[in-house]
Length: 206
Image 1 (tube, rainbow, N blue to C red):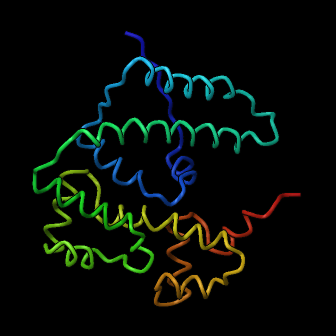
Image 2: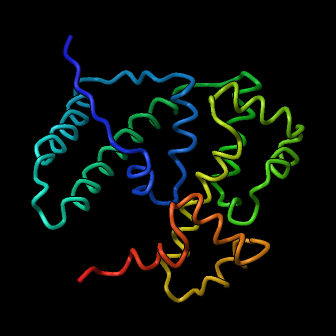
């Protein structure tokens, strides 16, 4: 048997994804069944993605090395999403716990976490108790409900911060944060930097 593997920093990979949230539902499903069976052509596509990354791994002298590697990683992730989505289209889930988790991911995919980030809100929408929802998601996925809410929220947050027409106060209001200071703490916790620092990081470097 031959094995090829690829490892990258989770924050780096997570920061590449746009706000389509497929990664949330996909990761939950893969937690339940991590094996995706591929035909020869699908395997070839994925190996090509790996090899492109491998071939450029040592090109750190390039001025846009990080951006280039990010682009190659993003291509690989979308190819994996495609393979996984095709598998999901043929799978059926009748188990109630799987149904609850699926409903949660469907809610998050609507972008509702822009303003709703409390577990109790999602429990009420799904007609279960917060305790039941938390226990079910933890048992099925190994992660908390809050972690998935935040994963859905961060791309939305980045999208607003990327729009220089919006002030930080406007963004905090649109995302229903109680105060600008709470908004800033949320950014620092989930982006690793304050909103102002994040925006400065987007500016071209001299």
